[in-house]
Image (cartoon, rainbow, N blue to C red):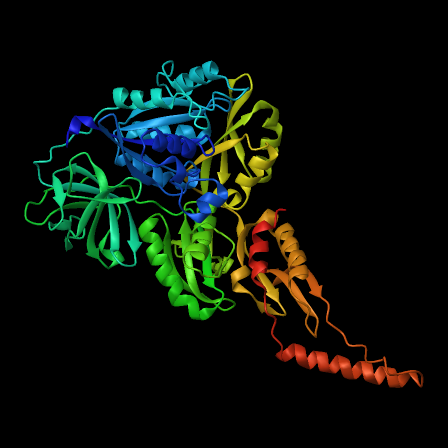
Length: 595
């Protein structure tokens, strides 16, 4: 029986690895949505990459029945690179569970996500997880939440998601504390599209939160932004699989299929309404996300270019923060320049393309968007190092800067400061949050942190440090284009933009690594790092050599010299017409030049 007052829409927000997915598992269990024999860890994380890495990268919606209430849970990622997924989830909810590890306390992404929830006017219910650990400190963490976030936490629910301790108390608190949705099912339909997926047989499946009105099979619906019309073929909810229903009404969360074949017809953040009884104004969507990291993706087999294009189209439907455009490379052929929210995002996209679409791809070194002021005082943006003009063509280069908040136990402050200084970081503030937790505020060039800063931060602090960052604008910098030549030919896919102070060091490391990766040929292969026309580093891959003197058991020295000269001339001729095939891992090794 439909009753708006008995609906609760909520999401779970947390820092990565604070037990959010495990808590979602226990909520599914206690509500009886999944039978114990069908239960598996990270039940809602159904992508291979999520299960392998133990992280959530996609939001998931599921409808639960508990004590006569309809609970719509939208599970969210915890990593900073997927905050766009979190923002879309929060737009479809009235409340959020703020999950904090009772042993680690408030982390960087905890703060970022809870501020997102507060901006969306959500009621936030604090939950302390892992209270059964021997080093849990719930009382201290409650004070920490109140001090840093500014919300009351003395009544926070203390649970253990792993053992299931106090999950029943949490469920009752969700019903008591979180407000029911606002809306009227008699008003014109307004449905917010918060996600979508492509199904080979059904077409595009749209995930919606109904704000007002009602939608049922046979209705003619249209999108308010693109104004395209479709006939609804099925509506339903996730329990947790797709379950068909007669209709979806105001306050409910579910899916709609309408035979939508074209991916371009649906835009996440758009509003669906009825064709005949149309809503006048679209719901506020989401702010357009701007990619921060750019990388080239190329198929290993050039015949798979069209397959890669189709795969990226389908992936952008499911991950609207991914941007791409075609580009070509002399070394790698036709491919795409892709924009990502961060390095983890780029790794996840690459893995999803390989696992879900069975593609073998090469990714080039990531870069950021630089801003150039030309000699004619025109502003030009450079995302691809191949497009970097000659220094005589511009007056100034600016690079994007970020403000990063680093949270670390006090014993690792020295290690964090050491890494930050190597990455051209400038410290702005240092604050002790408690006797053993420190918050460091730094300003970094984005280019310095996109490759491996997060990994280095984690490894140097035994996984305890965390970070959050925001873009703060462009600043003038001194960068140059570093080209790599193999056998005299410039390999455009290995080009990169580096800071002048690091150019020699990076160039030397790259050619040194490539010397071990490039396979030996019948001739010597020079590997050079160049800035403009100047070679700054060089290594040589020695030639495979046949022992032409093996058959000479004696005789005059001139006979041996003649054979060696003949071999030398042959190798010279071979070098002029020979080509060097660059292995796939050469492009990956360039990413790890700091190791």
